[in-house]
Image (cartoon, rainbow, N blue to C red):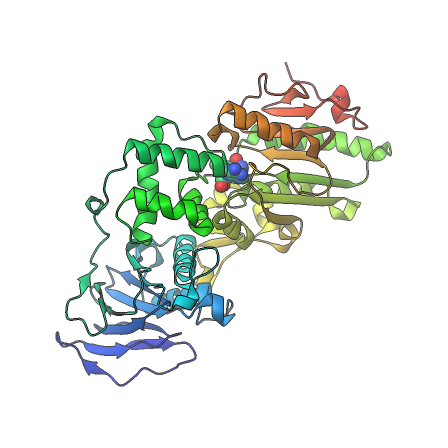
Amino acid sequence: MGTRVGSANEGSAAEVMDFSGRPLAHVQPGQVVVSMTPRSLVTILGSCVAVCVYDPVRRVGGLNHYLLPGNSGETQSTRSGPGAMRRLLEELSTAGAIRERLVAKVFGGACVLGGEARSNGGHLGRENVRVALDALELAGIPVVAEDVCGTRGRKLIFHSDTGDARMREQRQAGATAYPAAWPDATVAPLTEREFSQFRSLVRATAGINLTPSKKALLVGRLVKRLRACRLDSFGEYYRLAEQDDAERQRMIDAICTNETHFFREPRQFDFLAGRVVPLWCDELRAGKRPPRVRIWSAACSTGEEPYSLAMALLDRLPPSAGWQIQILASDLSSRVLAKAREATWPIAQMHEIPMPYLRRFMLRGTRTEEGLMCAGSEIREVVEFSSLNLMDRSYQVGAPFDAIFCRNVLIYFDAETKAGVVGRLIPHLLPGGLLFLGQAESLAGVDARLRGVGPSVYARSDAPAASTVGRGRLRREP
Ligand SMILES: C[S@@+](CC[C@H](N)C(=O)[O-])C[C@H]1O[C@@H](n2cnc3c(N)ncnc32)[C@H](O)[C@@H]1O
């Protein structure tokens, strides 16, 4: 029992005691250290990030000192980025920590060298912080304290047995302790003027309409970003988000609701499988269509929607019968797209997927992936991802689609924005192609080129349809 040290820098430095009698271990860049006995872990951070993870019941903790993922090109390595996070969690689990109890504190990511500043206004340190926070979010580990960015290198001391962490500038006597999250009281309240500035910026960037009733929600979602950027007023944060593309993207990420689940709105999946697919099969037999189906999931969030479509379609239109399924999945948020590409979800979501599909298309995680499930190759192969903002003037998405799923996103737009988005989507539907919206999203009066044919499903009816779908064989059920 004792300290487990991982990474290429195998073996810890010689140990001395700290003032409270704990052995003190120096953690080198690229190292992962977990201690099963009380120990002070010390590391010096510049642009690098250290993540301290702690199980308060087992009283076991560890930290990784990430290398710069942007510089090292080691995205698959256990010394940097998500690999270092996986290694830390693996070591903690070996030390007896329980995943569901873990909490994290994140430190470092300073802009220490002038040359590190990026043309987009970001800097490597901030990018490292984002990688660390994304990896923690993906692992479902709450961040209870952050002290990141800034302009100077600092020393971090983490007590593995209490979870306490302190940062101090080198050669400085005082240290800031982070036993818990920063209090909200440090942030000045959002003024009406600032709220209105954020409303305009958010609407222009993502189309999202923040009504006055959303003020508290905006504060709740942005305060995390203020902390991460070490700012204590919304005014300063607004100026940063306005100037810095990367931070503006993170602001939108923080504001967007990404809620989704597999086979959401089952009536629409029943409609697709029970009414639309048989028509496509009839058309193929009659020589009126190729054995190919193209679908676009236009606000795909973390991927549950496109993978549900992949399962439902591969089941009924199998490649063994000559069918080719192509699904384009896009979203504005790079954070959710990264998760969608990873195609890994908590196993608790398995109940959303019908058992035969679960058995055929999904894989269950073991060992370090315990508690997770991921998409199997059959469905991965038919889904392609792309970053796309529905506010763009035009959409670069290739050939027209048999169906577009644009569900539970128009609800965040005002009437004008919604009409504009629908108007730009229609040309990307084949004649007779189908637009699936969320159940709360009516198209009444929005566009005469669309005709209701199913539960929040509309057919493109402005162009002569080769397809039987568009020629009226799909009618609303009484
Ligand atoms: C509530 S989720 C809906 C996910 C999925 N379509 C469903 O119904 O389960 C809304 C998604 O819309 C995305 N979104 C918001 N504004 C967008 C925009 N302007 N362009 C593209 N995606 C956007 C968000 O990032 C989020 O992932």
